[in-house]
Length: 361
Image (cartoon, rainbow, N blue to C red):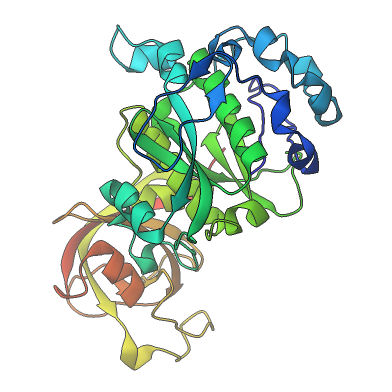
């Protein structure tokens, strides 16, 4: 996982730390002042300098700046506060203090297990059944890891000690600044113009303010695909900041850089599966019941829709690749995977609301 320093929205490039991060010795980080909250985990929390808890960035980054010149971070040291949307303290209660939250960030060396990660993510991950994020590897590999948390909310795991330190400091700086809207936190695709490693496809943050990028190699080191790592970090960070986690539909919108249009529809949706699996669709593709697709009578092929089950509120993003349904007044015929994600595979026909999506600006 590479660190992408937050930039003012007016700047296009997002410099990142790449291979240089792995060469940064842990001794570069002072260990003399503050232990960030002992817990019952395997080892005591790693010591972090009190300088890193300050909202002023000069002292926090002075020890690291010589390692970051190659990543063009020197010009960022003078920026102590960026405002991309609404200040975080305005979203929360009047008594909230960004520096206090930053001081509560912990990093600990633990022996991680898949069961532990499942329990920690169960608040939101139960809605992310396999079909809701196709191709995502979500099984944490057991072994020694560095767990990063805010208070009692685990954010995620990092396999490398140096990357854990660097990511912790990046999060401390961002939260101390409190200059972003936590409701916009999600995993997004890397945009053109962002300076990243070749194997980086996703960043976590807001559209205007990347927090850090997710490197495929580093995410796979803990057993995750980059999509799942990005969603995991984004949802746990949202929960730590008292914001509801992303629904699968909203997570898919972020990962595909989509947003709602003004065109929506309501009606009944059915689904079709095994009998048609492997047969050609109306646009010439081979129907795969495990893909997130949908049939519609007239929408252009390739149109993306966010569909909401009006019974249980579950959402999914689907792509139009077939024609139908031609039974009654039904407006959509979902793939089996999409029906599973909406919890409608047993019901057969459900009331839905669908919004046509467009590329985000």
